[in-house]
Amino acid sequence: MTRLNGKTCVVTGAARGIGRAIAARFHAEGARVILTDIDGAAARAAADAIGCDVAPLDVREEADWARLAEQLPAADVVVNNAGVTGFEHGAVAHDPEHASLADWRAVHRVNLDGTFLGCRYAIAAMKRAGSGSIINLSSRSGMVGVPAAAAYAASKAAIRNHSKTVALYCAQQGWAIRCNSIHPGAILTPMWEAMLGDGPERAARMQALVADTPLRRFGRAEEVAAVAVMLASDEASYITGTEVTIDGGLLAGTAAPPG
Figure 1 (cartoon, rainbow, N blue to C red):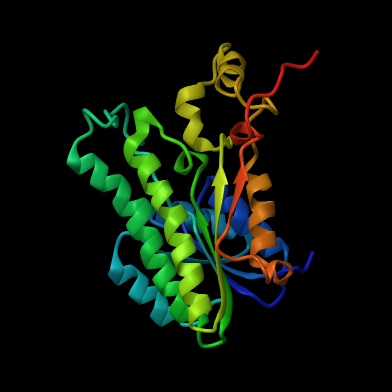
Figure 2 (figure 1 turned 45 degrees about the vertical axis):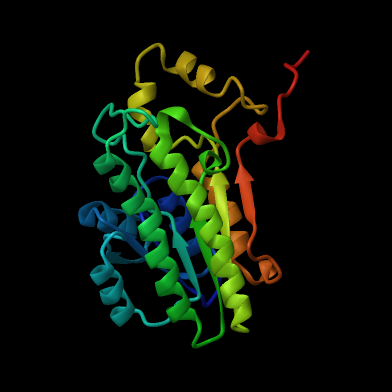
């Protein structure tokens, strides 16, 4: 497992969930991984468990990115994974009628501003070598409307579009710096735990939440990490400006129930 041997990879929001799975898989594939997260203690614990490097980073803050650029002026792969839904601290109105401007901006500041700054850092860190891979974590929600999570859906849609813009810009400059987006559907990460609970109704809740998914199950963070490895590797040298959906077939249409 050496598909990323010799590559220096930065993964944001990697203390848990999809980001941690990507960091672990990159490390297993031979990369030097710099695991970053706003939660310093959790980041250190995850990095120690994986065996990779760690750096504190609040993706919203330009100064944090500048500090990372000083510490790590060159990188081969940057995964902009850090993101929030807006529901981290409980139920909040996020529909188009009742969402507050402050809550809207809070989601966009992490998801969209963080990705913008991450792409800007990545371009500077890769253009010296003239090559690299930027991977932005969008969402299935960035490809459809989500009435109860308007800010989240809008931010993820913007990430999809900005990824294409970055890809075109880098190609225009004559650099082999690729930029692609990954669009996970329902991936079983800690984000879902508050909704699922741990009582006897957990299994029923899980089934209800994926009832309209053709494969009828949650995805695993490791399945997203596998796609990230492919996009980060030299095997994907002709893939840029595109998106990969990992949603169990949800956006493909409606599957007939098994006979």
